[in-house]
Length: 374
Image 1 (cartoon, rainbow, N blue to C red):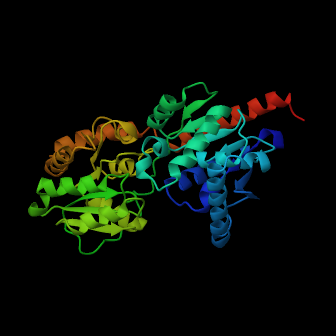
Image 2 (cartoon, rainbow, N blue to C red; image 1 turned 120 degrees about the vertical axis):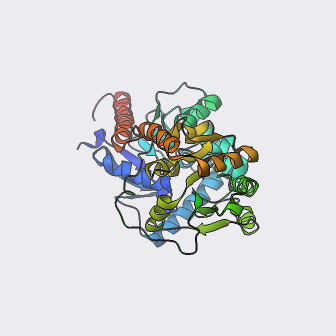
């Protein structure tokens, strides 16, 4: 394919990230490979993610430069920001700090949390993303969001005067259905389940307090939480140790995750902030009714048939947990049918189509600026 019909993809995100962000971008990059000339990992162009040791080194150097640029804006005058020969698709706003953005570049925005909820992130994150979004506001590139909630937060903060503000919902995984399972030993037969990074953002501390308030532990129903740590994990670990019936499992593999989904009584995720919320959608696919916060990305995923609560109200979360446990089969089936219809729109085909439209619009805008092929 002609090079003026392709863009570059800035994928520094892949150097130190193996969360849902990484897998979404990896899959979409593969699906749009005919429109992508090369991938960029900080300052290294490569056809694929560098080996682990190299990734760690490049990732650390990228973080150092991003932080330094953010703290010392004068460096742009001495060492100009990078500027791609072709349009650049940014898989995260952070790396916009390193580039001179143009109106035909594309930025993928996972969530606005570092701006709207800075207390949930590590020190310095807010400053980096504030700098990135100011550059985005000035350049007005094309932007894709992973949820309507993130898009609405962005518009509220930065307006809607952009050539593209599109939503590309991440596709829902379907590989949980027929694969093998692995039992996790020493868990009770009845339990509620939370899956996701453990920390302040997912609201685990309030969920644990709500579980204690619910009295479910005395009725033989446990509360199982699994996931890797993020900021605020220490407080969650302390609360779990001090609360009867809570099992903090840490990271589990896919076989164990399938077993947990199959045997749980309900799914609990009253998160304060989510970009999209794939675990809740996976729970629905595994016939679990989720408890989520009203409004925001999780509500967008589940629709109105989830058990909806105020994520800041421990009493509401406790009552919602009891609802999950005591719900009869008829109500459960009705809720799941409605939620499965809602998540049916989050397909791989829809996500790929949205990415391709954004890339094609980027290329068309770039070619127009150039006056046609060179």
